[in-house]
Image (tube, rainbow, N blue to C red; front, top):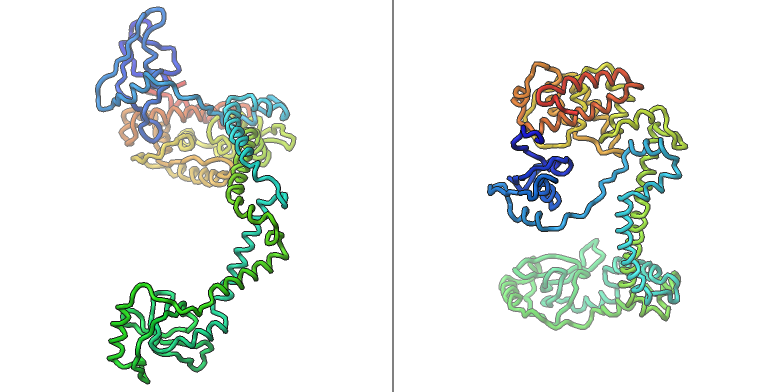
Length: 523
């Protein structure tokens, strides 16, 4: 470019952001970029990075950013990107297993907590904690009117008392689901033929009252709205209304004459919505009995029934409980933010001790010394595969296929070459091991079809780039990205020459076979 040999460069957002490669003019042909799964609109920072490449320092007084009209341009996104403020920077700091091993290699355990505390990630977590601490101060002010009363922790005391009271009330309600004998006896005098009564579902009219052989409870025959005649226990009657009709009784079903039945059905349909109730059900008396039983029972367990603060506690409890729950929730969140990174480090340390990469005193074992060199995603899976000798005597194309399936993170479907039996068998072992490590590390996708594509490229040196692209529906850019990531993963294995020379040689052969055609300039 500096020598004038290139007229134009098609740049990615990565090139725009991180390479000192300015140009006099920048052309924006789209306002979105395809990432792992879908198209994503440019952020404000990305638009400014792209446009900011325009103008060569020391050569151009003015740089030009040209936006071309096309179906792929959303001017709202571009305008917002050129005029807006960049998004806040968020730390991408992740405590991975290789980081733990390398930190413990370089520093004693007691110094690492201080190192993590000085990280930008912990700085952002502390800012969030400070915001919550401000809310906590306001909540404590709101809690002041709800301080200690007769009971020091009256909020918990009242909550337990209310739960016990509700449980007792429910038990008494179940126990007294059938009316007591005096009430039922009083009601039976009014359950005569022609009496309108209330039932759990609707209203009815009594045709007869009887007690069958073997029945302990008195029974009634009821004419329901619509003409249905049913039998039920007298205790199911919920209300006795001050309304009755003449019934011409009969000794057989339906226990009245046909003409009387028709007249009763008509009269039932003409009943008003509201009918006076006979005052015989003694509901208030039942409630008083239940409440007195509850109070007598709970008075032996709680001071609340006779406490002078009971009215105030009953009034304030809901608000006080809500405030205290918010205080507890914010307090736990603040504690987690302040100590989150250190706890994650400790968790990773315990896992590494469990698998034998660290001693109980947090010193690296022989396995930990070489495992710290694997600084890529899914490092625990890869190191465990090496320790299990899954790659022992493996061919370069099989190793490439396995590493590609681990590196690939796109689940879009497509058409790919057929998998070889050897690669299929090894991928089964990898998948089984990845599932067993799932509690400690998220498993990769392990797509067999993607593994077959890289296996084909390495296993057939005569295959051209165009020929490879014809074997799959994956876009060329995605194929290039897949092979580039596979080279990166194989390069990590290549660093293990001192401890695993055979695996390192196989990885070196695979890298050489990968770097051909358009991939020759891969680092």
